[in-house]
Each structure stands twice: as structure tokens, then as C-alpha cells.
Length: 510
Image 1 (cartoon, rainbow, N blue to C red):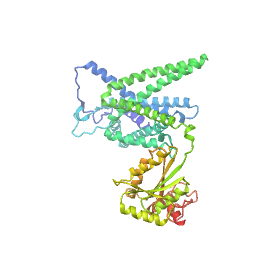
Image 2: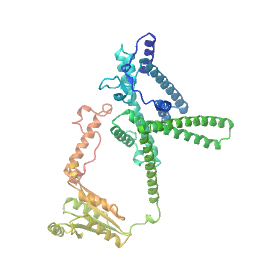
Image 3: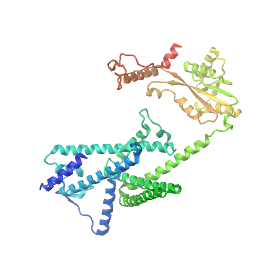
Image 4: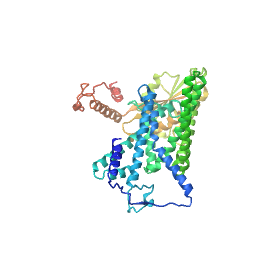
């Protein structure tokens, strides 16, 4: 505000003193357009200017979105702030228009074709930058100051969406119109998922529109004025609902006055919306309209999905019956430590029946496994499932289905040994068969899948590295000195809080 108002006042003072204020584009000329439809073209130009001017004042909705953040009385303080904000914005806008007339600025959407007299490769600066360069031609630091604070304002304007959308997304997610993940807060008490979603979506828009603000603003204008119309229409319905119950004449008079104000606002914003859609439809407004329709359909589909899930998961006496029997199946590929752990854990669950199952994909390996199994005397039968096509998933699925079809009230629990590794590339070398099998078994009714992890040495090293990183972060966090921690000894001192023993170390201790 200091920069813009200072520029306006100094520019008017210099103009009254007789200074020749000329912008860098003052010597250029705008290319003449087709004059065959002068009347229609002039009306179209006026309407487009009107809609663009309204779009320049659309930041006021940030006040209405932030009413809960005001001190009491919230509505009065918000209204006062809104009045101040509107007054300041209008004064700035009028001041910039006056200086634009005094400096004879020529600004074009496409300077390469619409600016006559511009040199080759001319880079058109913004109107504020051209005015600041002309007004502060005798004091260059002021020009840089105005340009710098204008950039800061744009950054804050972009940040407004990151303040508003996560809260809106949380409300919609609570009403089951958006995924539930948008409703949860992160460890910094912010709606982290909503912030991440908005950041990714903004990056996609920037790439799709090449970061061109002239093209992106069309999406913004339509969305803002649609929200204005919805809010004004909602307020009219709000006052109608209160008027049905209110009998006090004084209060009814105030409600009628407020309803009239909202009705006038609805008419004004509806006119602007129609003008914006007509004048900027081909410029990109159609994308916003199509996106709104798509978002509406998606949100309705999400709500229907959550409603169907809630109906399906509703409790009933029929689903509260205990299973008749529990058949435990331990998948065995080799006789090693992960298999022994899975077998021991399956025994600890006390199932009605316990069977070890292996798939015969290699005759020699299967015979070796059977010989080892008989030599160990585990007192658990080992069932060999034939696989003529040397696949693992389908034979196991068929075996589990046969157990289930004998008695529909029986439950089959499948224990799958899995490796826990410390690097992402190691995951590509292990657990692929277990992952495919688990994904298929989860779709089988009456089948429970239990993963029995076995931590490899690399996972213990990765866990230890993460523990040391947490220790260093705690020692170097703000307030570490106040809590009696020495940030300079982050590598040598033990962790200030007790850490659980890694799974691999626990196994060795046992």
C-alpha cells in the first residue's frame, strides 16, 4: 500500500509540476481491429472490460472465508475489514488508471502482433512496472521497491488458496463428498493432504498453461463468480428460512433489509458471470465450466460410494456369529527361519486344523523339502499342491476355495512368510509371489491373510540409520538447549528418549 499510494501521489505531483511522464510503450501504437461491426465490437469491449475490472476485485472473498479467525464481534470486525479492503483496492485501482493515462501506456495481449513500433524481441512489462519506471525515472530504488513488493503480494495471493482450500476440502470430506484423507490434520495441525493435493494440481495447471497468467486468469474468474452467485443465493435462502420462524417486526425488518442486499448482490454477480462466460468462453472459461461439472459428478459419486459402504457395513445379528472352525494354512517354499517363525505363530493362534502347503513347481526341490520336513518331525502335515503350469497363485487359491466350500461358516487363515528389507531395490528382489498371492486372497470371502515378517540384516541397518536421524533432529530442533540438550554433540550423545529395540536385535536376544 505504501508503494502503490506513494507512486500515485508522486506521479500526480510530478504531472502537476509539468514533468513529462512517458512510459516505455508510449511511443508504440495498438494495431487497429476490424471496424465493420463498430457498435457490437464497442459493446463487447465495454462488457469485457467490465468483467476484467470485476475480476481485479475478487480477492475480497478471502475475508468472508476467514470470518471465524476474527475476534468477537466477528461479523462486525469482518465487515469493517471488508469495507477497508474494498476502499483501498478501489483507490489503488483508480490511481493506477490515472497514471496509466498520464504516462500514455500501450498494453496488448499479444505484443508481437498488436504493438506497432515495438522493436524485435520486445518484452512487454506489466502496467505497474511501466508506471513505476516512468514515475520514478529520477529515483531508481523506488522502482525496484514497487516491483519487489508487487511480487510479494502475488506470492501472498497464491498462498491464499493454500489457506482456504484445505479447510474447504476438510469440510467436504467430513460430509463425504471428498476422500476421507483430506479431513485429517498432519503433525503440524494443518490439513497436509489438502495442501499436497492443491500443490500437485497447481503444478499441473502451470505446466498445462505454460505459466501464462493471461490464460490462467480465465479459470479463476469463472470460478470466483460462480462461488459469488452460490453464496448470495444461499444467503437469500438463509433469510427465508429465518423469516418463517421470526415474528418480531423489528427483527423481520432487519432480515428483509439483509435479504434485499443479498438479492441485489446476486443480480450484480449474475450479470458479471454471464458477461464473463460470454466474453471469455473461448479464452479458457469453458475449461472451468467443464471442470466444475466434472467435479460435481465426481463428488456425487464419492458420496454415493461412502453411503453404499456405510449401508453395507452396518452391524447386524447375522454377521455377529462366531466362525464354526478356523483352518490355518502356512505357505512353505523352503525350510528356513521365516517358515519356522510362520509355523510357530500359526500354532500359537490355536487353530482347529493346521496344514503346511507347498506348490510343486520343481520336482527335485519338492522332494528335498519333503525329506527335510519328515526329518524335522514338526507334527504338522505338509500338503503338496500340484502345479502343471508351474504357477503358484492359482493352485493355492484353488486349495483355499476347497477348504471354504466344505463348510461356509468355516474360516481359513493363510500365513505368508515375508522378508523385511532396508532398501527399495531389495524389495524388487523379494516378496513378489507373496504380494500377488496376498492381493488375490484378499478378495476371497471368509479368508484371512496374515503376513509373518522376517527382518533381514539390511532392515536392521536401515532402522538404526533412521533412529540416528531422529536423534540428530531432536538434538538440533528449536528449543534443544532450553531442554538441556547439546546440539553440538548430536553425533556422540545417546538418544534423549528411550528407543524400542529393533526387531532383528530382539530375535537375536531371544
